[in-house]
Image 1 (cartoon, rainbow, N blue to C red):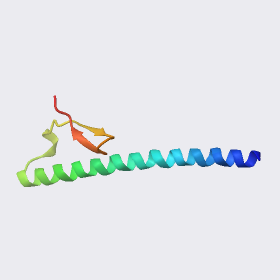
Image 2: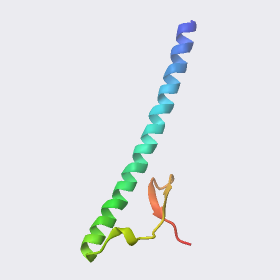
Image 3: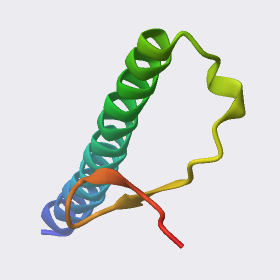
Image 4: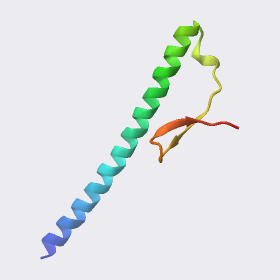
Length: 70
């Protein structure tokens, strides 16, 4: 019986790690979209990305990065 309880605990920890990894992957995919957008915009404008001051934060509800507007 103790083996079953420890196995359940192990599976629960594993599921938690999988969920955390999935959340991080979603953040990285959203960041990838923003970077692709900025690269295409900079190529279109013929400028450099180093001058940008845009700030973004990850919105867990939308599962994407959103521009911070002050």
